[in-house]
Amino acid sequence: MAARGPRRTVVSCTLLVIALGAGLVACGSGGDPLEKPYDAADDLEFNVPVGDGKKADPDKPLEVTLSGSDGRITDVTATDARGRHVAGELTADGSRWHSTSPLAAGTHYTVGVTTEDDDGAPGRKIYDVQTSTPKTKKRLNVAFGPKAGTYGVGQPVTAELSEPVKDKASRAIVERALKVDSEPAVEGSWYWVDDKTLHYRPKDYWPAHATVRVHSNLADVKIAENLWGGDTKPLKLTTGDRVIAVTNAATHLLTVYKDDQPIRQIPVTTGKPGYATRNGIKVILGKQSTVRMRGSTIGISEGSSDSYDLLVHWAAQVTWSGEYVHAAPWSVGSQGYANVSHGCTGMSNGNAQWFFDTVRVGDIVKVVNSGGADMTPFGNGFGDWNLGWAKWRKGSALVASPEGPTPQDRARLRPQAA
Image (cartoon, rainbow, N blue to C red; front, top):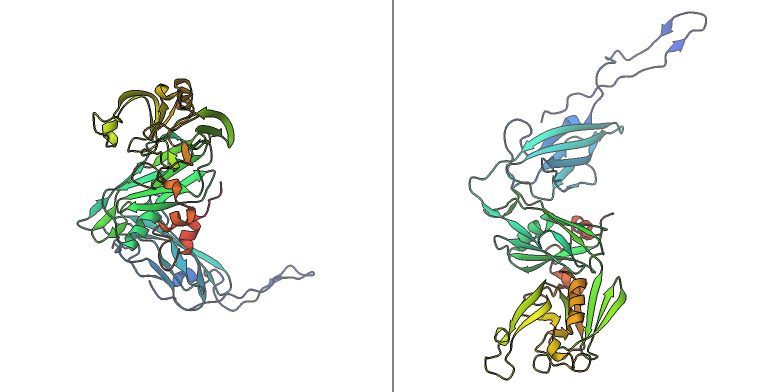
């Protein structure tokens, strides 16, 4: 950028109206009264090519500096054609701004810089910055889940990555770019289940009748050496009523709550000794009006006294390993009195059909007072809610860093205004 030329001042005086004459008398300093006043924006300098056909290196941060001491930068905005904003920090004296989030490759940015001179007069200039595109690059694609639709208030959002991401700094870049917004707004966070899988959930269950929108800002952003973000299809979910079922294995009763009010109590049987139902919070994974259940799928050998091969109706699945809430007409005499199943929660045909019609995928089924093991957070369904919020937050690459979350991350993790 060119250096600032000599500063010029225009001095004006009050025009005097002479009561007895028709003349006006003016005085001045001899300078040109039409000359444009000094603008602090004239002294801006960039660390990258600006509007001259050359391209900026996306690996480097964008920096804007105000030379001299006769003004200050008050604000900088950098936005690309997708509407993505580049985060940045401004020094306390307003002399320098630098980006704190990575620039995307092969992207055009519109950079607006607002300034004021030492007299407080504002100025603003707009610049064009074009970043270069690497010759070779591997794409990191993201697939959000579940598919678009309406779910229960316990449904987590998932993100499946096409490439593993292990480095903490790279994970932070990915996580910052994966955005989840809800109406009404709630506090939530991502959790890295493994190198290629993230889950997102709120601190508490989603609000009933909420709208959840998920999108990625990773496109063309460098994540690691030779790994750049790809395009990702956004996702929109809605939630239904707040429906939570609580199974008390000790009293052999399942109580269904809607909006925290009990609406039905159902006699049930749960897992007998050796096959005790898992304690903990589970999420309904799917529903099948008829499903074939065989003991061999849970390790029971054919011909054993515990072996079974049945067509079961009105089945709501809660674990990948085969735990369901379903109709069990063969055990009606034990329902409400004893636990005789191989781990599922069984009830009469009528009650099972009512339950099947009342719940949806994503609703909560909580089991208490069983002799079984605890539901695992991951790997056998959605056990995400069995982690307390403090432990869940530690699974975030933004919160778990030794230096703690940045101000930008803290703002991201706070609820947004509805």
